[in-house]
Length: 481
Ligand code: DUC
Ligand code: ZN
Ligand code: ZN
Image (cartoon, rainbow, N blue to C red; front, side, top):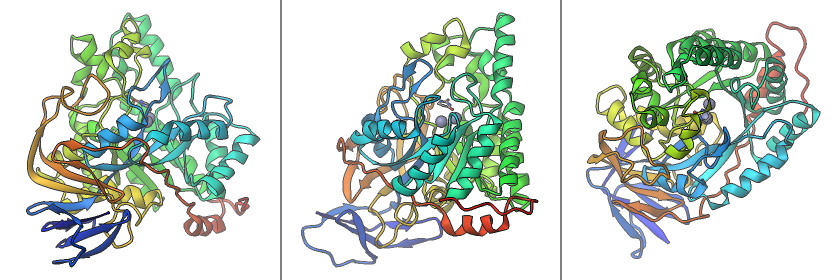
């Protein structure tokens, strides 16, 4: 079973060149002009199109149990929709309930993810702390290919990690060569603001952004970054949505701290006016955290991507349908938080980024695929077009158009936050593990074809940092693998 993609231009994070790409047994076997391949190889004509690494969405929540319900896209429907949009890998989240052993939660998520149509990995959330959590983090890194741990600084009385947990977990990440990631919002402030707004009679979705202003995010981002600085551990801030948290990242990076930032396709193009829409269903469908922001924050995020202070784009794909969102009809704080996008991220980024001149094609590849692969140690197996890499590719038609709509998308949700947006630049073909899974509108996703992808720990860099010890302290971090 082999495929040759002929006549296109290969676009990677660092260059663009004319070449055919031959894929065999799930890997890229040859790259070059006028490749001589077996006669029975399936031919994809990419004339006038670009051959790029398949997208990697480093932030999704398929079938997440959350806020009293379960996200409506499961690992099959969600990854299949991703393939239709040129996205060939996801990194999802194992989120243990407080006091749930990490390993139980990890095995539960592995079981759910068995039906994935595309390759996947997991970040594991640290939602509580004791010696068993510390132990299990070691097992996950050493035996299960987990190299990143997530910390929710919001969602008080649920999955929020307090400062003690952050400090202990960040230190453990440092010992293990794993990267801590944070959802940066001050959970106490959100909780207090929610109570005050509700007491004032503000119960509709317009209360959602008022309870989560940019300062709430900026404070948490800065706190997490400073804790990471003291622990001398790299850190990754998920879904940066505002100037305040971008400034904290930029400042730290300018000081030489290893801080990474992710932004969401939605935050780049949708503003906070959606929460003031008179129709509850429409406004509630946009409730996610952090919320959509005003134009000045959107502009800052684009600058962050352009200037290299934000490295990745994701979706926080977490679908809830109208009947699920209705749980918050009389109280915005009960609206399940989440929006979709795994199918649309690449096209929205191309249209709003490349077509406007904000990003080059190579930068597009970097922020949709390569940087995530490098940060989470999947590179060059993922995120590259190179011999020996997984044959996860997208053939991109820069002239193709699509009007995004919930009526035609493949995501299992009755709403699309990009509804009505016509994008120019769409995937004509998606190849996953060397197989054509999307061909000119024909989705051939296969349940269970996706593989769990192990991500090794970051030994070399962390060893060097560990030798320096904690920031500004004389003691060395004891290696404890
Ligand atoms: N934010 C969301 O909007 N949904 C899932 C979790 C999160 O942090
Ligand atoms: Zn989050
Ligand atoms: Zn999330």
